[in-house]
Image (cartoon, rainbow, N blue to C red; front, side, top):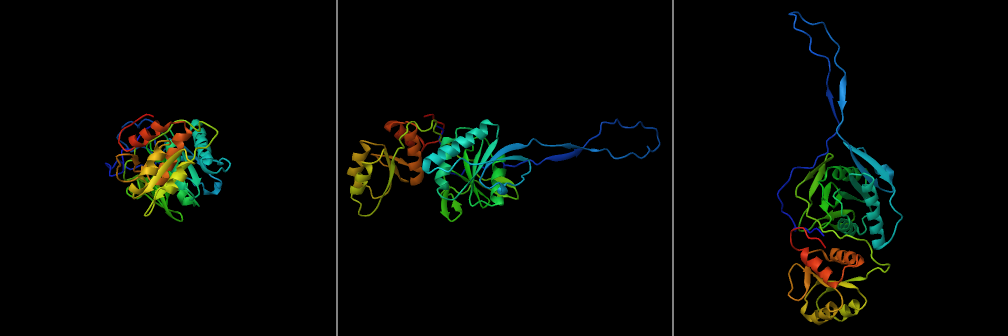
Length: 324
């Protein structure tokens, strides 16, 4: 497991760029001897084309018409896996991307609809253990969004994980949230960068990533609950929910009225508080509650036990690489 050092600001690195093919002129003829007289007119040397290496990017989409030529990029279009609900669809996309990377792709772009795109991006970021970039183009994606995503996939530095591209903005999967119809932002962090005229420019360094190795370890899908505590909450509903869950994420507050129900649940299953402030008795995370739920699901599905899950969430709040 590789862990993020937290939100920006970071030192600003060089911009990402995609180098287009270049043309140059060259001749192999030696220069004429100096005879003191003007040489006879000669025909201009034929230009010799020097092409910069092209990066191969696999585009996974149901609509091949969205593919667009991008300088320096060779695009291979593939059909996405058969639609599957929930985490089964995430694992199918992860496998499709892994096959593309195994076939030599240097980046993968997936056109994905808006529904749960922020959660899907985070799940792919956690499951993608390779160094090559994986980019989601928010849908309904137009040709411009797809071209921008291809530029980012071709130019992103190694270890960028999963990125989201929408309306010319580049977002890290850890922070991106859907804020409206085909609208995304990264509250508290801001976009990593922008795409302007086909050039992807990075404003912040991508966060170090948290990755979980291993797919589903059992046929049974884990059940992870998400409870939002609010005014007047006495813990009764939380207790009933916890009885049917393999893990639980609790957001909101106040927590004192539900402390007993929390303690009872935590004695049986992993319980994490999605809260900007710490808590002496329970493990807390700065992740968005929905993304905390995604992470707990992936850890449970990969066979991590109670203590390993709590340790993973605790370690994720501190910078530095950690293996789980």
